[in-house]
Length: 373
Image (tube, rainbow, N blue to C red):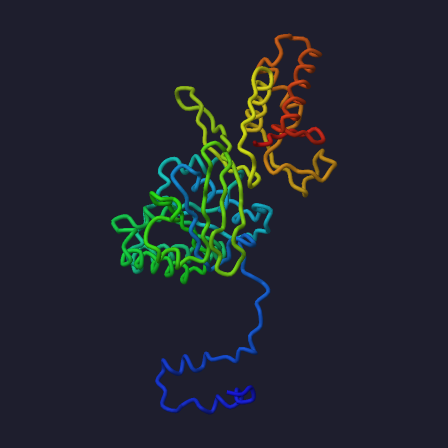
């Protein structure tokens, strides 16, 4: 068909085509009329778009839930994530496998704004929980606006009673996810596990990988505390991007027996960091432990919008405290055997500078924070 013949297609309608054929016919568009959409409906730019499906997978105990909560926290608060722009939107976290520990993990976050659904779900029949969950979220949207992301933790729990390796059961699961996506227009993130052979990717039937738009693999070397989340599949975006992080222990308080209760939060790191461990002992260890404790109790994140005492444009990616607060905690932990103020100050300065030289802490304009190795 020549270019000028495109103008003559409309009169061809009505030659006995049925409704299905007419639908296809009316969708035909000259390729030359196509224009690029330069504005993506991103939630986290370069990682997650609204209206897509992603799977975040890795072996057990690699921190999948902690990372998913961190992503939920970023999207629902609008804070940048991994150095990328974030578009603020409501988030629903379906903690089907969270158990009692999910509340503790969420409470460690700084003013979380996303929603939690702690109920089991079954995504083997799209007329069941998928439709019901979508209806409940639609009801919330009347007050809170369109949801940007729905996180399902985990695939195994949502497929309970089904066979992940079955093309039939996985097909039902995928249909449920598509139903949930269609009825909410949200990004659906699935938390999943690797199989016995981690080199083969996410566990279960290959139709899941074919169905998702984004695939994020979590890996961790045994000798390193650094976990890497790598985009191994992006349907319309660049692959190979890496978000590196560590799990930082956070104190929540003490239980009825006086024992400490802790959980973890995600602390961003650098991809490809050396896994060599730096050892500290003596006064260095006392000072480092004191900094960890005071950050847990009184640490705050600083941003470029803050009007605090920092006069330079260097802001830590993690919580920080004033030097005075750190020094006071060192005194409480008996950093120096001497009770003299000058001796205590000297011991603190020596330990602080030693930790800085080892790259374990940083100090700028009277603020101190931990630098993870």
